[in-house]
Length: 189
Image (tube, rainbow, N blue to C red; front, side, top):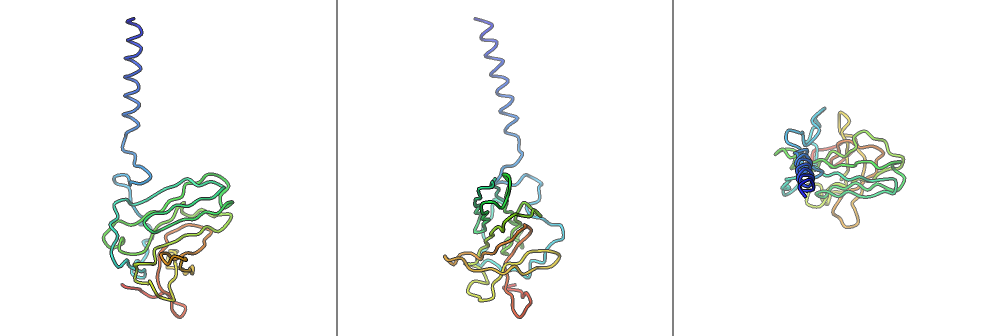
């Protein structure tokens, strides 16, 4: 009887060690790791050109991730969304939406979509908040992406009027603004 109890005790101790190791603070898909940047700060975009939320969102979680395969799928996060059509990727790929949590950035309609720099076989739709922002109701609302300066991607308001939507073949940092006379103008800034 004693050998069985020793084996059970050893197995239990080993299980506790593995469980404790599995609970290490490595972050989760919905919570940023301590010390990890919540938003890409390399080549920092000029946020002054972007739309603002009328009421600054209370962001407590900086990012969301979802694995999406060749069959397609969707990731929604705080009014931002990625819609991946079937055939856009050839293998299961991790998609993400990162939001700024700093006092100035989080009042702007801006997000970093990932995987950053990946080219897609078919255009992927992205959506950014429109309702409740300084560009709501504007006929010149547009989505822009950061490439050393803001590049106009165009965009249409979704049928429910909540978001601005466009198609892209790659991911980067995207925001919303107004475009007039061939140039991007500051909105609400």
